[in-house]
Image 1 (cartoon, rainbow, N blue to C red):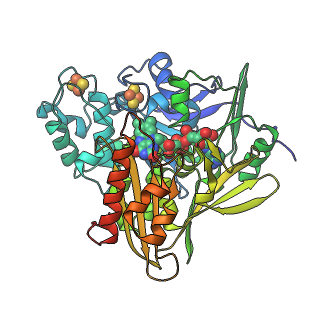
Image 2 (cartoon, rainbow, N blue to C red; image 1 turned 120 degrees about the vertical axis):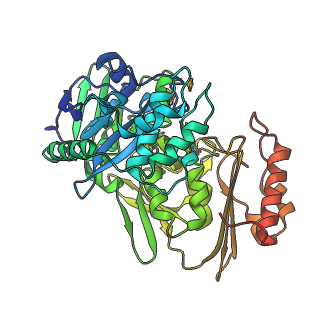
Image 3 (spheres, rainbow, N blue to C red; image 1 turned 120 degrees about the horizontal axis):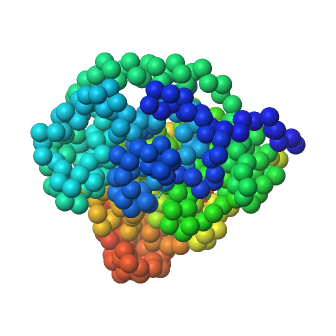
Length: 462
Ligand SMILES: Cc1cc2nc3c(=O)[nH]c(=O)nc-3n(C[C@H](O)[C@H](O)[C@H](O)COP(=O)(O)OP(=O)(O)OC[C@H]3O[C@@H](n4cnc5c(N)ncnc54)[C@H](O)[C@@H]3O)c2cc1C
Ligand code: FES
Ligand code: FES
């Protein structure tokens, strides 16, 4: 085994008309700190510093496989600075750098949607993303990752509604073309930045990733960093070595075969949703209630599974669909049904030299009905109290797969209920916890109702 030695020791990105090069990037550096304290661009605000409020929202553009910029809305407070490599960074200052306001800003101005103004730059970026990404989403969905504490949301929602039909102005189109040209000329290699007490590795290939994993089993794998970012900003973790997955080509691709859709573990929740919803339209609402656009654009499918959370939203859905995981080490590859990955709370079937490579979701074929219900205190950007994913199959056994998050120490199937088809048997399948989100009685009662509605056919799909 060989570790590549000849890698770049800096990152390069495009910002305000220039190619920037940074060589002192550390494991704990988040983009917001660099923007506000080094680039002195203080339009981007610091609110919660944990991905919840959207005050720090910016947009990054990375080249896709066709060499075209694909935009992402991000929370800079938990976005590792190292992920800017090969990207175009757009902050609120970038928009008016030509002297005049961008069209979304001009549309927002007369709507009286700002009092103290602290949240406004973040909303401007979310509205701009709604304009340039042209996603199939409502205005409310476009703004679900941004909070305003003093103005009503009416004007903001109206601004997002108008933005979705605003053409992109010629000056911005010209800037996109310029950024694409500059980014295309950058060699597509990985990097490794070593400083005292800090090492950031960004492998481009799965082989290099596995070599690193094997040589440094205690290094932290970082994918979208929507968990990792909070360990740094809130728990004040200071990891000495991180290995980034998002530059690794094999982990960031999606391929559709006749039997399965294979999604790389470092594919964002946003791209996973876009690829799966045409096959399973019932997942549309589930998808839009997963965090907000910023969390979905950064957070990855693999991270949401590998963290082993009992309240992660993708695992119950994948269990109900009968998905499996591809796991690899330097030496071997193996496939397991996703439900077998979760052994107990905090313990997953993943050895220190292994990484989660991809998730294989069966094509629709045999699935007749799918219902996913997320129960949470808030509609948007909230963690599940219970997530029920229930599938009915047209043939084979079992006829139903009923998977739950929030009911046990891991996401799991309600096996006894699947056999008996009696919702009361959920009390044998699960002994849920009481916590600050809900008590055990509530979790059990709501789950029984959901299963009852599903089995009696009165639950609405979606
Ligand atoms: C504001 C906010 C809202 C949120 N809302 C939701 C929500 O509605 N629903 C929900 O389910 N979650 C939600 N989350 C949680 C979070 O977004 C997810 O858990 C996310 O999908 C984690 O993925 P990541 O790529 O960001 O993981 P990271 O933070 O990069 O990593 C998470 C863990 O997984 C490990 N890991 C990552 N990739 C691999 C791999 N390929 N192989 C092995 N190990 C790996 C890492 O080492 C780490 O231990 C929210 C988070 C925030 C901050
Ligand atoms: S500061 Fe609140 S999301 Fe970043
Ligand atoms: S205008 Fe004050 S927080 Fe939104």
